[in-house]
Amino acid sequence: MSTLPLSRERPTVTDTFGRPLRSLRISVTDRCNLRCKYCMPEEEYTWLPRETILSFEEIAALADLFTELGVDKVRLTGGEPLLRKDLSVLMRMLRRNPRINDLALTTNGVLLAEQAQAFYDAGLHRVTVSLDTLKPERFKALTRRDCFRQVLEGIEAAARVGFKGLKFDTVAIRGYNDDELVDLIEYGKGFGGEVRFIEYMDVGGATDWSMDKVLSRAAMLKMLSQHYGPIEQVLEESSAPAQRFALPDGTTFGIIASTTTPFCATCDRSRLTADGMWFLCLYATEGTDLGQLLRAGASREEIKARILAGWQARRDRGAEQRKELERVGIRARLVEIERLRQDPRLEMHTRGG
Ligand code: SAM
Ligand code: SF4
Ligand code: SF4
Image (tube, rainbow, N blue to C red; front, side):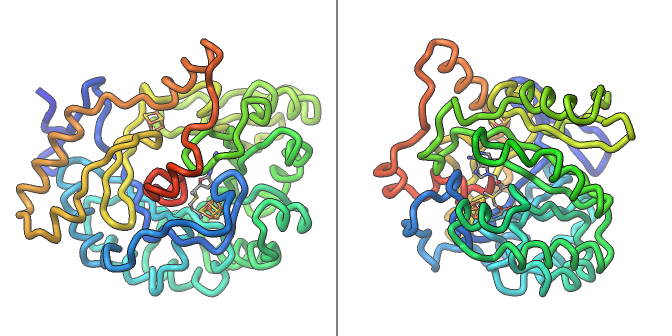
């Protein structure tokens, strides 16, 4: 039996491995104003047709159904979510849903300075800014856009308007930014925030990926302890992907070791693309088209039944399977560029990271 009443309001729907349906990442657009090499290595993409992009009302309606099945954490992402006009309006709609007790945003920060106040006023709980380097020239080389200053201004604005506990997500790439781990931790500290280093993943879009560019958790910890001294793991019970560590002075940071130490066993996350395709795993190649169901006039109960059945049948353990390929020596990029051009939903920037 996979639907256990936790409380009267919140059921626990579990998948075939007993993992609960808790956390939903909603991509509000597949467009982006950067071209990070590890995510969008090309200049031009096959975009989702504009008419298929869900309205805020449609997104909120689907989010509602997910929360009736146990989701209580929602993260808005993209592409670059701040390219979606009036995003604070969607935040307000989602905040009206009492079942969502954690509403977060992941952004590249470029447009954050002008929108941070509106987001804070709309009730957004948490902001994560992706920040891979503190060197302007490196930023430009990695993202192929010259907006480093705007990102820093965005972070400063988020802190100024009152967002506490800012998080900074850094994709750590060997030979690219592995000399900046300490600087990034120190930068985060200045905002009372926490840096989370993400191992470079071989997701769709990362057509440049190779195992030798992955800076492993072990290598990061070694580098950091050489600088700071002994590092301790923070012991906590959590399904969050980041393992947290503390420096001798108490400063904490996280490592998301998706590539070398997958955490699929506790994964409670699924993803909704901007056109309403629901994916059960970051690596999934097939999804359920909830957007189309909604637009075809399916009832709330029908859509809920599809979500329930989908989660209950879930067997995804994408990162663990990728790891297994590595063990037998055949791990390589996930999808070739030609196939990505045919199916834009395979891209990391379409499914929100
Ligand atoms: N544009 C927003 C941003 O960059 O924050 C939100 C979407 S982006 C796809 C979400 C996250 O995915 C970012 O933190 C990004 O660094 C991460 N990401 C993208 N490609 C990745 C890869 N190949 N390996 C690890 N993380 C990746
Ligand atoms: Fe970079 Fe995010 Fe845009 Fe991907 S979606 S290119 S990670 S800013
Ligand atoms: Fe979850 Fe898939 Fe990532 Fe594993 S690879 S943690 S199952 S999203």
